[in-house]
Image (cartoon, rainbow, N blue to C red):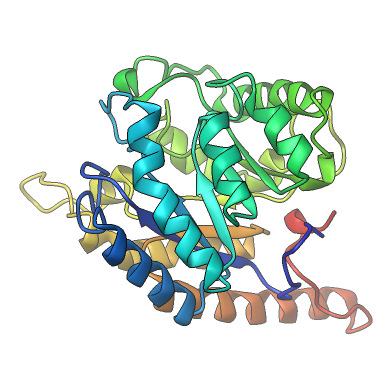
Length: 302
């Protein structure tokens, strides 16, 4: 069990607060700090277990911003949400931003680079003793799809996550605090995303590790869903128009053992979590003859 997170007996739901002008689905909507705080509080009131606050867009083609800009965007939001009692995650690749956010009350670090973008990140996480999302990543968003070349995407993601795990653990991060993220859309084409989703059980066990790690699935509104749902003339479905598809992914991810789903819209996804959890519990009970009580998703049990 990760420190500070109340056992929910189900897959957790992480709500997204993008304090950016250019995030792929809602850039600019929550750039004003007061609006971002209100949105974070709304997500929590709708049932989000975690509110993930980020100030740097990682959409395809995005350029890095100065650390001062990232801090200016996220710090008022993190501080206000933490003071209101929210369980806040800081979505950042920078150790300085993580350090400041944790000091202001954030209780988790969600690093899409898995520690590769800033070699000091693992040390900050280790010192704080907080949960750490380590995502599979091959480089910054300016060249999002150039590195999306795989002969076996599952094997290669497992191998690269295994190397990141070794590195962050060597830097002092408690392995019991690590959550893995396959990095859907990051140096992944649509076919790679679908293959990884179909093999979450393998992603939970990266190369070199036998016991499963918790897995975070962040598919919400991503382009591979819009591509699947394209209209007859080939136009991809809009980002917001992919919310129902996101809910479907959430249900399937729970059935596959995901520990948490990261979503833009909480209510429908939380409903999907509850339904899939009940379905999964019945399937487990049926297979075991009713002897084993249903528990949380297997990929989150450490």
